[in-house]
Image (cartoon, rainbow, N blue to C red; front, side, top):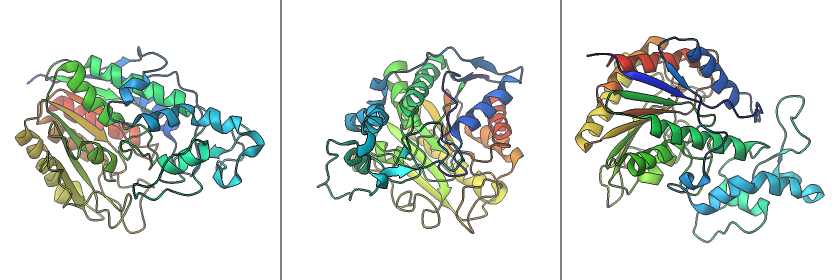
Length: 366
């Protein structure tokens, strides 16, 4: 079988503003490192033709309008608050100098999920309602960056042609922890979920499989499609008793009444290796996607499964090594489906570009 065609979709329009509220989350730096590495390889097609911004309306295919409106306007509302800004909502970057004089916006408290809460009309009330942690800040260029990511997803769907087609959507921010109405875990818009929905709407495909290979559970994606019989979601991750997100991604969470067995959560233990644990788990997910009758595949590519990734809880983490990602690509490629790979996490910036290359080459060779 001839090797499959790989196209890299990326935009270089985003401003290099790093929301460095902790020492690990460096999304723009990761994106540029991956882009520069892949662009140096002669056999990958680089597509940077997407516009400077996408369309907020495509986010509405999976997200509540209130969340979208908040992400679109939160920074300008925060800036406009001026001296009335509540210091409880401040978060200063870890670097010595901030890129602007206004501190990042994070929630002072997180709303109860009891059905009685409302977002309110102020920016402080809205972030307390929509945000689920203090490490996913609202910063100066957040709306512009999210629009660029949406444009990358739209262009990736457009670029997908036939079973031999593989498209890598090199977005800035991950998205798989964002549900329809909340965001967390360095994630804002759920790009993989948007991609799955656009494949249905714009490619006339009925059944989509999402396989999430990030170290952390794809809790936002499973939440969005939990009762949707047209999208199957498999997530392979550290057991949530041991690491983020702690409250979702359990094996017994298998789908809603309209989509029984529409979700497959495969929980692994710390120090999982490719040969002894991860390969068989991924084969289980691939076989389930095949049984589902998927017509296209979306891969949520988190690279924090790497053995030296820094974002893990003590005594947790996996032991996946560089060559294993090529095998991961081959295993996913066995589905022989048109495939969009969407960038999620991965925090060892020096190694992440090689991991992406290995996975894409494995998909090529399958």
